[in-house]
Structures are given as structure tokens and as C-alpha cells.
Image 1 (cartoon, rainbow, N blue to C red):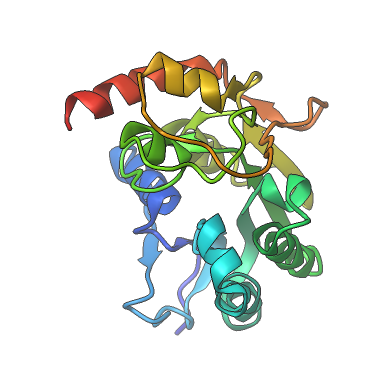
Image 2: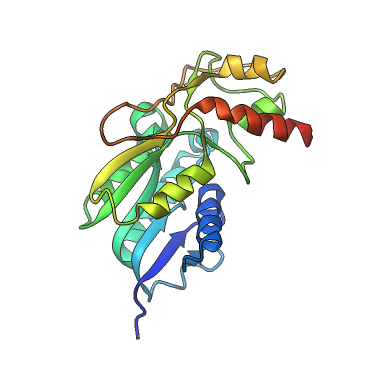
Length: 239
């Protein structure tokens, strides 16, 4: 017998997926976590809401391995859409699907979104850059470690706490039906300014990449990106 009314979280062990799982556990919201190791053994269940957190978030890796990124982003999303049973599919994408269409990473994110838009009920969330518990890669980690940053120093990013994203997604499972929504902060920080603020020794090399949200009636904003400095200060103190 097919069970109903479950919340499913694809990629629940990843950075964003684990934040959503933590919020559900804290607030006693029942869910089923679906990971690569379990190899999607829960396909027989009928989920009321199925959240896809399983797409890769490695831009440099996507450039280096474009075929693999296509498989993990586009083909995997297509597999989820066709093989799982759900009433509504909630797809976590990236602002890169708008601002990085000249890259493999951005184009594949956009292609995955286009697949999701073909089903009956969905929400697509384009997430800005995030920070928080479990972050282990990306520009912030590079700056903390004084590693090379493969971006122009004048790039502007809108940094948002991942726990805020997780809370919003769960509280709005029923909302934004068949909408595409960008989520982030209402301001941004220049990467060079972050470097100077935390006394990083990172060097920059690359093109300008502005991960900034469009301000309109549907996009969601969470305060200021400057709160990221608390995270950076705490992370550096643990080194």
C-alpha cells in the first residue's frame, strides 16, 4: 500500500538539505530523508511535498567536468520528476541560473529549472550564496583559509544564513505554486571588502560574478549580508 502525506527531502545530508532536516527535527515535522546511499528506495511512497536539495553546488567542478555536472544536475532532476510520486515538487536552484548563463554551472541549473516547469505543481527557489553550519566549500571558505579565489575581487555576493532559508522553505510548502522565487539578502558585499575585513591573504583571479537578487514583488529578502561577518569571525577562531 502506498503511503501518503510524507515530506520527502532529496539530498538531506547536504548543506541546504541538512539545514532543512534540522529545522524539521527541531519543530517535530515528520519527513523522510532520501540520500544517494539509500539510492532512492522510497520511490514507492507518495509524497505530499518533495524537496529537491540534491543538485551539486560546485562551480569550478562543473567547469572541469561539464558532462558529470549535466548528469548530476539535469539528468538527476529529470529522474526525480519522472520516478518519484508527489503532489508538489519544490526545486532548489541557484541565482546562477540567471546570472551565470555563460557558464556550464549556470546553464545546467537553468535546464533543470525548465524541466521542473513542465510538471503540474512546483515551486522553484533560486538561492543566493549561503553560510552557516556545515559549510565546507565556496568563496567564504577560500577566504577563511586564505586560499586562491577564482573570481574578480570586485564581485558582489548576497550572503544569507542557510537556517533562514530552511525555515522559509518549510513554512511555505503550500505557497508560491508554480512560481520561481529568488531568496537572499537585500544587500551585497564586495569580495575584496570581505578579504580586508577578516585579514585574509587570498588572491583573486577570474571574472566578475555578481550574485545579487532582483528586487521585485515576489523575491524574498532576509536583512543584511553583513551578518556573515559573525560566521566568518567564529570560523576563523576555530582554525
